[in-house]
Amino acid sequence: MTAPPMPVAAREVFGGAAGQAERYAGLLVGVGVEWGVIGPNEVPRVWERHLLNSAVVAELVPDGCSLVDLGSGAGLPGIVLAMLLPDSEVVLLEPMLRRANFLEECVAELGLGNARVVRARAEQMAGHLAVDVVTARAVAPLDRLAALAVGLLKPGGIVLAVKGARASAEVRDAKAALERLGLRDAEVLVVGSGKVDPAATVVRLTARQ
Image (cartoon, rainbow, N blue to C red):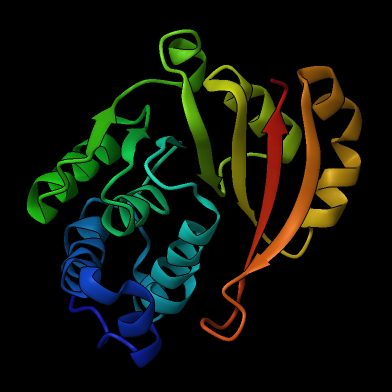
C-alpha cells in the first residue's frame, strides 16, 4: 500500500524531520500492514490519527531527556518523538517479537541513532531502566499503565499517556491508585490545538522526587 500524501499541517509540525516522517508513513502502510502491526483500515488516516497525534506530544517532552515508549507497538509515539527530539535518548519497549522486529526495521531505515528497541515487558525492566519520561499510547487503562510506568521513572520523572475523550474520567477513577504509586499532579492536557485536528489529549503525571 502507498501512504496518503503528507498534509500541509504535517509539513509544518515535522519541519526538518518531514522527509523522515514521509518514509516512516511508507513503512507503516507497507511493512506495518503486511506484518499486521497496523490494520489496513488505518491507512487513510495514518497522518491525522497516528503521526500528527503523536508528533504534538513532543511539545510536552523536556529537551535532551531520556525516554521510554511503553508498549511501543508500531512506534507511536516513540519513533515520531525520536525523529523530532534528536537530543533525547529514546527506548522503544515492546514485548511482541513481530512488533519489535518492525521497530528495529524503522530505526535502521530512518537512521535514528538516538533510538533503540528493547524487547521486554515493563515489569521485566523495572529497576534496569530509569528515565525522565515514560510515554504510552493505547496501552492500558490509566491505573494499570501508571503501575507499569512508575518502575521505569527517575524521581521527579513524568508519564505522558496519550488518551481519548475519557481521559478526565480515567484520572478520576485512578485517583487512589495514582496516590498509592506516588504519582501526583495528574493533569489532562490538550496539545496541538490549531495545528492538528483532532488535537491530542494527554494525561501528564509526575513521580515523587
